[in-house]
Length: 271
Image 1 (tube, rainbow, N blue to C red):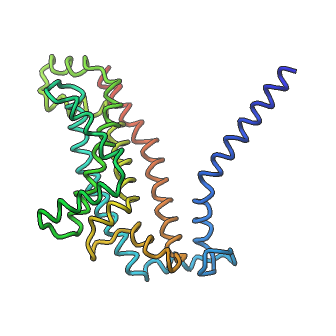
Image 2 (cartoon, rainbow, N blue to C red; image 1 turned 30 degrees about the vertical axis):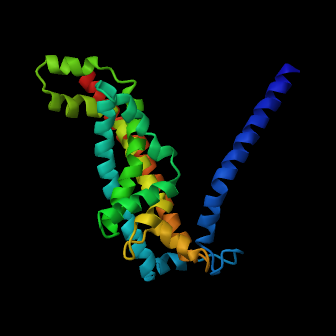
């Protein structure tokens, strides 16, 4: 009787997990399926075609917005990762006056409504008389992404053994060499995770980008949003599918080979 109850509980648990996964991934599956639809209207699947994957290169507005998205996302991710990593190490290692205030202020860009942050950034750019464009977009994306990198790297630092750094410096390594050859490899998984999070947030943002972009620097999310009223064409689904495939490939590579290589290097250094 007890075994029968356990089997029922396990079965219900699997069904529950399956329903959650279906709820999460069904919309993505719909986008992928309709990227192969012969119909221009994303209502009924009428037939299979690869036509829309070729149409992507004919839609100049879509390609231009995608190019802007990649430029802004990659640039802001690099800047955010560098600043966020340095900030996380500083907040973790050193004690100074106002540290608690700085730590608390770090949460504001995370919890504040995006529309307020967007208006605030727009006001600053207006006061500085800075023309809206790619530069203002990058600054805005760096602003709201830094806390996420700081939190991710700090979480990694909580499991970091400072005696490794002390041993390196006792053996004659300077602070800079110790950081690049000991500290950075140890926290690299956290740095990469923060960078991927910043990249995702940047590519996905609409509200803040709406307030800080110019007429010639429209990003892909904003372009798609502007197309919603008249109907999203299947070539957008095709581009979204390609981005999804690229994202999955990056995640697989990052979670697999790269992390294994980092762990191997760390192990060798410890030995």
